[in-house]
Amino acid sequence: MDRYNRHIILSEIGQKGQDKLSNAKVLVVGAGGLGCPVLQYLAAAGVGNIGIIDFDVVEKSNLQRQILFGSSSLGKNKAEAAKMRLLDLNDSISINAYPEKLTYQNALDLFNQYDIIVDGTDNFETRYLINDACILTNKPLVFGAIYKFQGQVSVFNHKNGPSYRCAFPNKPKRNSVPNCSEVGVLGILPGIIGNLQANEVLKIILGIGNLLSGKLLFYDALTNQITTLTVKRNDTEIQKIISIKNDFKKVELNQPCEVQIIDVSIKDIINKKNIQFIDVRELYEQPEVKGLNVTKIPLSVLEDTIGTLNKDKDIAVFCQVGIRSKTAVSILKNHNIQNCYNLKEGVLEINEYLNRIQKQETNG
Amino acid sequence: MQITIKYFGLLSEVTGCKEEVYEFSGGSIAKLIDELYVKHPSLRNKEFQVAQNQELVPLKTELISNEIVLLPPFSGG
Image 1 (cartoon, one colour):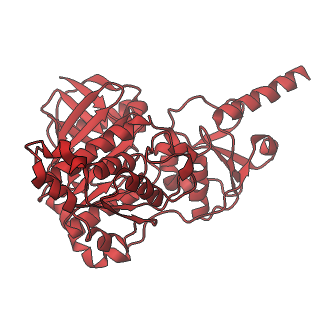
Image 2 (cartoon, rainbow over the protein chains, first blue to last red):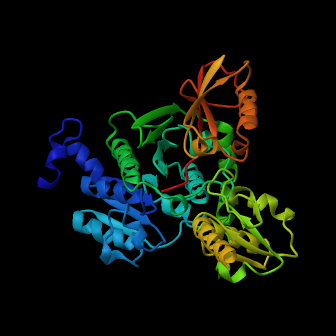
Image 3 (tube, rainbow over the protein chains, first blue to last red):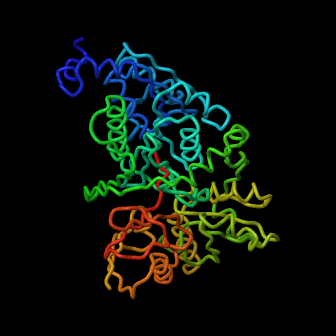
């Protein structure tokens, strides 16, 4: 077959290896920054059965890094849009799109239909769910995760190797680690990390080379530094998951309920009495807000400090640009604090406004 | 002894450096981390693992290397 000629002439792959790829079944969870490059190379390589699960829709701010999508995909479900693009790339493979959320209820049945699971998600709740479901269905997990300019790659749960919980046993508290939409990400970074993931998938299928099983690879795009750390299997962590097998489907994804968030502008509330301003940025973040009485409670510790808030006052939350503050308001509302508002301005705009009215007062 | 400490991910933002040299009187990694908490209080509420000699190790492990890595989990994708 012409399409796979450059694979087949490699002695390490040959027609036999290409047949292995053609018979393989790979599920990619999340068709975002990581999922797109993984899917692109798996489809091009001729992986015969590819599943894509993603509930989200394509937005313009995704196009900077989610390379399967273009203007014509805006507003479409990511799994469906990715399938369309991939079938154009390779119409000889079969692709299943699942336009839904991965949950404790559907994960085991879905994973059982595939040989290898790829994690391209963007939150810890789903990452731990994927890891645990891979343990219970005995599927290898090709893991990737990113932060700004840095990424991590590993192969977990492969032939009795360690799992994600062996590397990171403690699930971080919700919001303690910011995600791409909050802090930004270099567009090419998920491309690099996703390609490393795709490479691990192909090596698992072909049975060639050395895998990142028992290794956690760390990559820094700014310095080109690669650090590979050994991860040992921790049977206690894995046994904990096996012991909850029968109750697995009863677990609910721990995500905050949808609440109505009221956006307000600094100019509308600055003169209100009985209001406390809360800065949910991390303590080291700059600049400071000058000329406003502010309580600093980083988002990462908000849930633990809710008891210290003065419940007789209205609460106005702000952060650097206005995204984390929304999360903070939904956390507060989920804890039954109703009189709280999201400041739609970030710190820079707030400072600009405060400077302006200060000047007006001085001049007037 | 002088220990080189490398901070990955957002830990370098919390501490203000990608790596630093720290004078340590010896003991377990947990003891070293406790001292780092005093130097960098914002590290306290951060989740991370520690690697010594290129291997992730439990905090109770005795420090034997002159370089360690503090590695947080990443969630982005």
